[in-house]
Image (cartoon, rainbow, N blue to C red):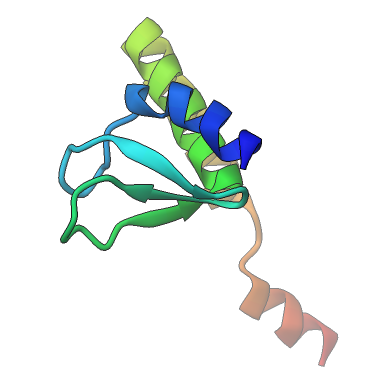
Length: 89
């Protein structure tokens, strides 16, 4: 229970991307929206990624989108999986 209490102290800085309310620790592995009727939940790993991406965007939006474009271009340059399977057949 101490893990949840510690997480609750730091939970309020990330808003729910669905409705905007605070995200709170639901268990050691899950976060959920604090709004009673909002169904939004995410894993601790996803919450950490969401926090890191939000922080990077807030710090420098231009650099954030430059990084996103670079990753997008890398992924688009990859050979599609269905073409790799055809080549093996």
